[in-house]
Amino acid sequence: SLERKKKRDRIKMEEVGKEPKMDLQMSGELHEDIKEVKEMLNLLIKGLMALATEQRNLNEEEGSSKRDQEQETLLKDIKETEIMTSMTSLRNRRRRVPRIKQKKKKTYKK
Image (cartoon, rainbow, N blue to C red; front, side, top):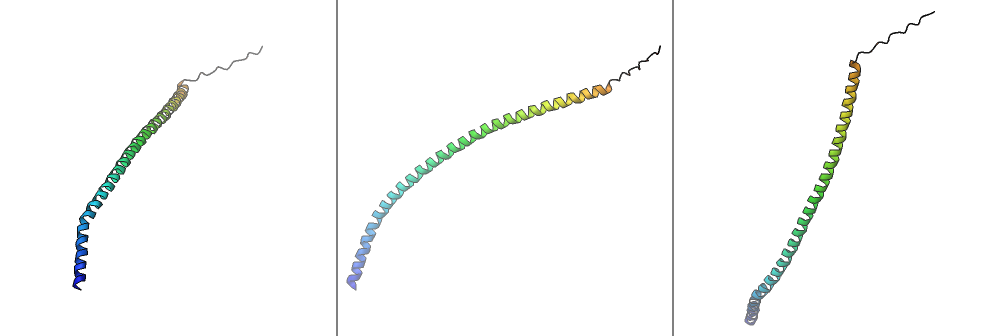
């Protein structure tokens, strides 16, 4: 039993001696993993920034085309309004002008 205990203690001591080495090895691996994750995150950030810039450019293009369409529609509306106004004005002028009564032609019988 005493030998077993000594053997167990010796094994524990060896394990304790190995633990720091494993910790150093594990920390090195972790450090490499962290580096890789950091690089991947940086690539992801660059991709997202490029995507955001592209989306902003598309929105500006769509916005300018929408503005152009809105401006066209506005110009059409203005033109239609001008036409309606001039037609109404013309109609009102016609109403205001006194009508000339035509004299009935008298036909003379001979």
